Amino acid sequence: MSKSKGQDLIKNSETETDFDQQQTAAGPGTYRGEQVVTSCAACCFADYEGKTQVGCELGRIEKFQEGGTRVIEAEDGEKEFYVVHRMCNFYREEEWAEYWKDKEKRVKKENAVRVSFIVPVNEDDTLEGLQKTLLSIAMQEEFEAVKVITMNNSTNKDNFDIVHKLHEVFGSYAEQTSYLNKSEEGTTFVGGSMVEKSADFWTLLEASFAFAVNGYYAVFNCGTEVSSDFLKRINHAINENLKQVLMIEPFDEGSHDGLTISCALHKYLSGSKDTTNFEISQPIDEKIRTISKTQGFDNLIIRWEDLT
Image 1 (cartoon, rainbow, N blue to C red):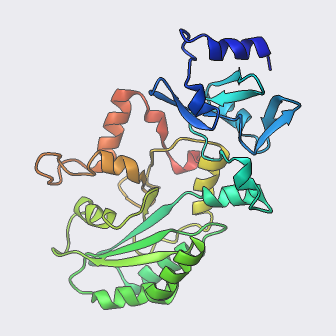
Image 2 (cartoon, rainbow, N blue to C red):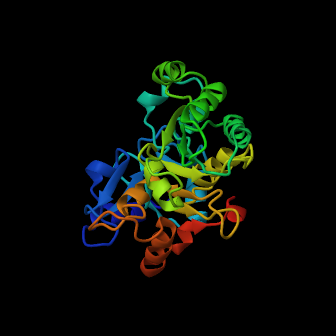
């Protein structure tokens, strides 16, 4: 790392790399309130030789660079360190690290991607098919679903039977809520029911999304067996390979199985609804493809086979 280069980056306020040192020296900050950046200066994972940072214990500097994120060198008079032109969600300070025996394991646990599973129950679906899907969600490797949402869209199924399946697989709501409050993990569930049965998929999705939590939601039809590494693959792509993902396309064209979308983006675009009368106007996946193409970030829409 070049000290003179770092000094130029901080002290020359007319350059494009000028940033608010009061914010970025302590982690996430902004360049003149516009671009989010992260300073490694006080991060417990920053690897130093003397006063100079030479890398990241988690290998994130190289991962950011490989993905095209700009990483610059900077200094504050005491240390020489990196500034990443992106939010680093693994940034933690030494005070945090003192509490954990294995800080790497802990930070990965804290940043596990939160996914709500939405399982529509339609006219031709069976309770056996529902159980198959729910069990495959419950048996995920390493990570857990944060929430499972079923939505009864059938005229021939009692919602009690659907909720009973949720209880069988994930335990009682009281037990799950208690577990969640104590350890900040565990899967909760909601057994919703459509007012107007046999609704179209996009109407059903909007009703289901009302129960989703921040993070992502993934749609799976009754009878679909979710691969045991589903959540593991998402976490690896986002937290290990630092991919930025807005939407993952369904497994097969013409199906909604595996459709995975950022909850924040869904909210921002008002889902499949028109922003004036709030009626279903355009499927959310079409909205995302359109706006991604026009604004030049369609690379953030990926297929499952490309999720690495």
